Length: 108
Length: 115
Image (cartoon, rainbow over all chains, first blue to last red):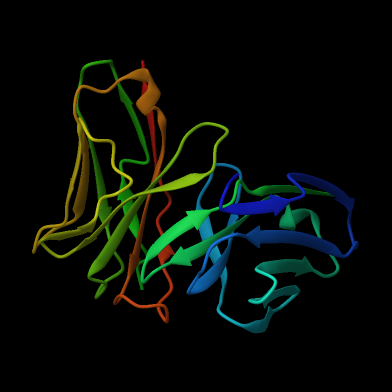
């Protein structure tokens, strides 16, 4: 079993829909990251969380340390949000362990 | 402000050749990480370096792979005698210091194809 599990693996939605991507982990962590990878593949860091909730524009990330669970939400989704979203947990000071990613497609 | 730079962006090597991948961290960052993304797989940690020191190489294959981050110049990931299974995207990230308060900033990646 992977240390970091994401669901769903693939998600297709219509423009404007509210999107939720989930991440569960099985190990102790010092922080959790949400990353975005577009086709052709550069990686952008969206959030780094160790507790609570963060919001940036239409993106919201939450984490429940007791439940070992995090969610990434996208409000008013748009085709340009189509990408792979990756959850990564930080073990110790620096090492990141990644989920398999969620491929999101937003249709116009 | 330049972000993390990686070059080349695409690299084609024949089996048995050497591949050298370069990573220039964000200016002022002294911590560099290398990750590998095999086709249809998730990212995997390879190595964590500070200037002139390897801190954690627990994700590096035992043979043919090496990494350095000299006092001057970029970090280099070197793969000797490449095989088809080395074909992957290799990402570098940097941070200003160690510790959980600091984000890692990713480069655009180098896509290595071994023919």
